[in-house]
Amino acid sequence: MIKKIGIGAAVVAVAGLLAACSSSEEPTSAAPSASPTETGIDGTGATLTIWVDENRQPAIQAAAATFEQETGAKVELVVKNFEDIRSDFIAQVPTGEGPDITIGAHDWLGALVTAGVVAPVDISAVADRFEPVSTAAFTYSGQTYGLPYATEAVALIYNTDLVGTDAPTSWDDMIAKGKAAAGVERPFVINVNAPTGDGYTMYPFQTSFGAPVFVQSADGSYTNEVGMGGPEGIAFAKWLGENGDKGTKIISSSIDYDTNNTLFADGKAPYTVAGPWAIAALTANGAKIAVSAVPSAGGEVAAPFVGVQGFYVSAQSKNALLAQAFLTQYMATPEAQMALYEADPRIPAMISVEDEVVASDPIVGGFAAAAKTGVPMPSIPEMGSVWDLWNAAEIKIITGADPESTWTKMIDDLNAAIGAS
Image (tube, rainbow, N blue to C red; front, side, top):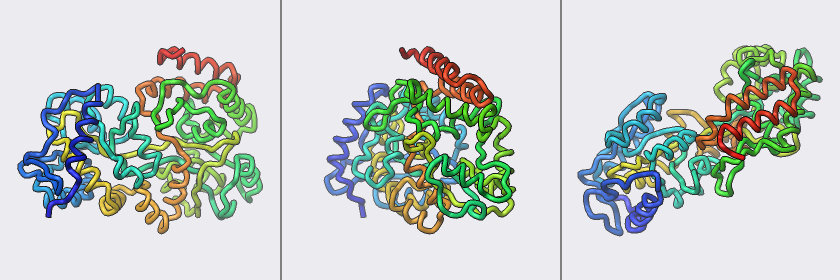
């Protein structure tokens, strides 16, 4: 049985999206090999090539088998090292050697659009199935360029034997409870990655002062307007200094990643901020934990960066319509999304699958709650100019530099680096 996909409307939508992709050349063909009808799609004779890593290959294989059966098209899964996919995609798409679809991270998007190797994808029919932050992450200059499937973000992790199961309501509440916990050396620990700095992990506290790295448009796209200057940024910088080496010492330059994890695992610190990748180290000594959204220090929502995994379509795909159909009709299903979660256990981006997973795993639920408060990691090219200046300013302030002048100079240097006024 051929799966019905409203092919006439899809042809118009895909053609419009490709025409709107000003940085990409027109594909040589956007139609399947046989004439589409209003009742289905015939992909007989066409081969859809998909790049995927080894871990996620089995999950995509199941959807591909159904796609082949229902459309007559063939799917070729090419297994690659995930670390190589971004550079290989940029290098091979212009030569015609790239895939029709590739798996990838959302923060590649700026580089892929700039290189002209990725095409918009119309996910409007399925967008409401996904967490808004995940679809926003694949939006660039008002266009959607990918289908999401998973998110990840840092969250507050706490030792329930030391501070109970209730999440703190604010930074002050957390510190008070941490100081009252029996046998601890520190009320809270966070990796500051001295001497380099770690703006990524500290980011939810910064956003709680209303100081985002870049300003976002209404559709979630990032502009290149630096958002962490002004009084909000200065307020965060002063808070950072007040809690640094010359202040309360709660945020200490002596805490690196391993020290942070050891202090928490040994019960010497009841709270930390970290990602799911640290759970094994944090619980290595049997600590019982809960996970929640990061509490606010500045009064606004503490929004961490959210990383999103998903799928891109090549700007040079000869099977653009088939690629669109495969993503929106075969990968945007609960079955396919659950298979991806089981193959690669990150927080599902599809809301129904996320709810199902969260119901059975409170740790995942805590990270999901944190991600819901978060914002996409900026994928614009200007983000590449941020990290060194930003991290350096933070660690200088933590170790005792004047907060206001250090932060202001960082903003000036950043604006100069990206050519902003």
